[in-house]
Length: 245
Image 1: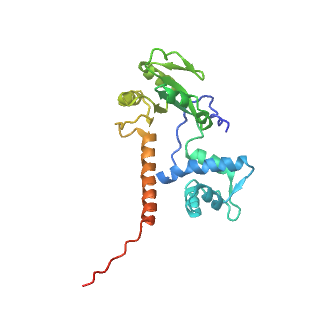
Image 2: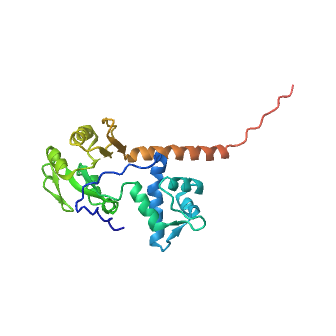
Image 3: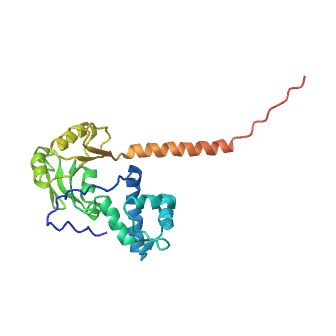
């Protein structure tokens, strides 16, 4: 998907957020990107109007939940006709804050950091990789897709210059807290942590984790439950044996 058009003020700095007219629950926020992805796929395939039933089936939720989620964004569905897919994508963009550009800094330019820095998905969703940080002298000064890798000591100046909105931490676990502190002290109020470590941040900082090992452990639990159920079904039936006196 092509990058969305930056705001008309001519720069890439985030515009002030417009306070929402109603609170959107976290569970709904988590489903909105799923709806958005489905709508974009439908639009690419030539489907311009979508029903709540079709959207629900693709998202694996019930239609009533879809209608309730979308009603929190506004009233733009037509009974019997469904939703205009392109317009609905725009409304989800607006609700998710994707109608503006968010400058991102990636701290830790190893294999994962490099992959994220080169990800087309960032630009497609209006996340602009504006700064890269690493303390390895052999990496500092290198350019990745036009962005220079800089030393973490330069972060305060970089943050002031670029109005960094989101910090992505891809460092080794032992230094992740120090990097988080540096990002917070430099004014970055949203952190996405890939490092396998629980971080401590002030209450006004948004912190989210992406941890593959945790996701695999959750899958391991469900896999074990599934195998346990299969074994339980296949266990031989134990019949009582009467005792003759």
